[in-house]
Image (cartoon, rainbow, N blue to C red; front, side, top):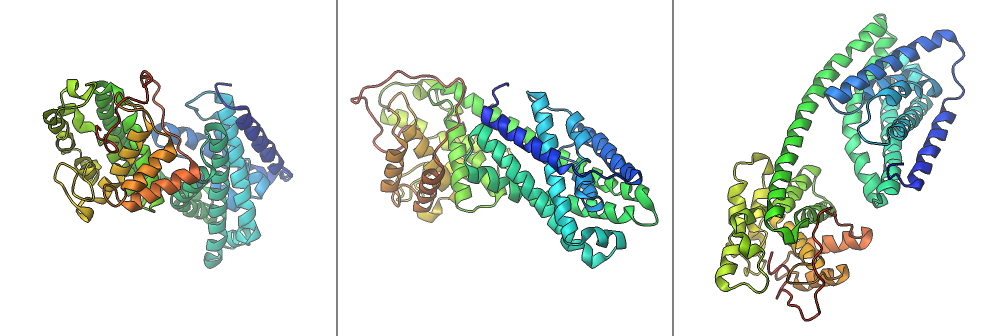
Length: 436
């Protein structure tokens, strides 16, 4: 089914069965159906607009349903929108069913948590102080359920480590869904007010404005990604023997930064630095990059200019921020033996120290024209041996810890060249990354 593993399909089937169980018992009073149908129709229409024009899910409507209705009725609200809204990737039916099941389970659980803390009575009475705790519990449970479900499908379908699959999405979803939860709570309170459902629907107008702002940010971020992809593709075309190296260094840099507890904004900048660390090779003659055999001292001096070239190439790209310092200094060494400026210890910017370890690790674990790939444990031992002289021990320890715990799953480039096997007598670099 378009490459979806059997275990992932079984997981989706279990989620669907769980969602169906959540729909019972359905409300029997006809007068209680029209608000459910109204919110379901509103969610279905709004979801199509949100996915085409903006980004994300119409959580205020879902949470309003969780705060207004019994759990079984609230679980009905997302179904039409989830089953009818556009899907970008195949298999379309499976993805639509999965989206409907996960939202139904999440809204059902949020409604149960909200009701257990007396939230429905507080909404009906418009009791301000008593509203907040049940609503917060509903938002927290919704985020938790969706994160667990999404983490499970990522772990089963894509093989991500469980910690990465569950931990990150939950923390990232709390703030945006919390804001949507306030809007949903306002809708629920206004629904029971003398002004009725019409006033409740007006709450969506400021949410639409905020979505538009977020969409603009999303488009700008997509433009940033396109800029980086274009630069990396140019480097890969020029230096074909290291194709895929940039993405892997970005991946290893991200792992180090996260293990060190850096905030997500800085983690993203350091990932950019890892991806673009070799962009200065665009200024180096191609014959030197593709030369088989050792370099002359003059040729080595030319190649050692690539950090400065990279710094100049990225000078006008404002969103890179401190990533540019990493591009310039990623070949500096703690003992001052690096280049281009021979900085020592803490003079080297922290992002550069992260990228230096990631760059050396990938250079050692990848096959090059002048060296064979080393096993990951051997590469980590070499980094630890050089820690304190060449590399920052904190960065080496962080990379060793995360790879020991989660393993190393490098990004694979589809058109990565297959180099001929080399004999043990083939030359290897004098130190990690001697020709990077």
